[in-house]
Image (cartoon, rainbow, N blue to C red):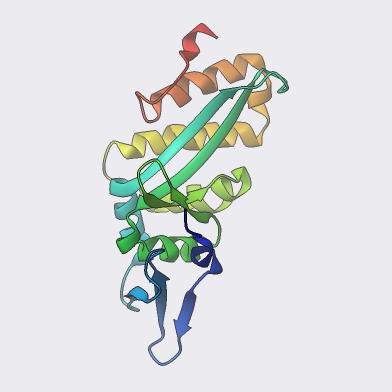
Length: 186
């Protein structure tokens, strides 16, 4: 497989003559610039972002059995947005807006994925945005459960067996149908 390293070279630039943010992204199979996206001064990007995530984003809490963990389970919250390579410019704008996260290829569906996994960044950057600019679909309910889990983790409650069970049950309700374990039996 070819190298996607140039995608991590952060091609974000500022156009001083326009006062706009210009992002230039190259498709991994094409050496030329694939597209340039401009965010005009009058654009309310924060609201646009919430709408975009409402359709293309994902709040999830991955749970893995890990014997070395105090409770036997590892809890990993993450926020992600996926997009096809030819429309990935917005992922770079999202990363610039939040000032955190990574963009990587997602081989499962041949897209690019913007992702934030750091609990600190989720709590200090991602969650406050969606509290201020809520989503309009049922994804808002997933976000609220996700937020509760992140806050419980920052206080260490995920390390207590009783609280862990409550977290696992809520995690199961986020993005239903994608769980490997039935947490009610833990």
